[in-house]
Image (cartoon, rainbow over all chains, first blue to last red; front, side):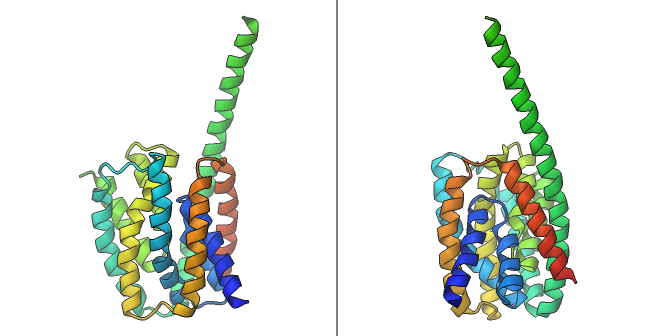
Length: 141
Length: 114
């Protein structure tokens, strides 16, 4: 039963992760808030399970030509360094502190997401209006 | 090397290491600033996060913060879900998902803060 619950939580996080939409930010609260896993453990589980998942997702995206690699090492190299230092910090911090910090991080991210959703919606709307205009012109001909 | 890549990279690593996830959410706007479309940025973010996650995961493993009894079912689910998500990316309206996800994040974040 527990196995199934953990599998389902993983699948939900994995769908978002495979879309490049922050699978971890979904999986970690699912594991802690819903399944009662400790914060530090949830973070470690998310990081390690991301490795095989992203390998699979990347092959799908690469086949569609969506992965644009030019210049990504300028992002990866500083990220590797800061992740090493910050995961060492996370390793010595108590789970309770990690959980609070993660909560604050989620609230901040959701604000950014609300803004992004608003702009995406407006762009899609104007794209629709534009294509309708073209349709009308076609009818005139 | 552009400044936004370096500073963005540092932020990606901090989120990934300290919060154990969410580095991709930081990487997407950085990659968009590099001239990629939304879909390309989402897909490329995974290529950025893969080595960074492996690095953070190694540290978490070293400090034995990965319980394997939970890791195994979760990793199976994540990998299966990840394949489905990758297939879905080209088919769904992203604004709807972004909005839904924002609501969920806000709720989870508030719950974890208090």
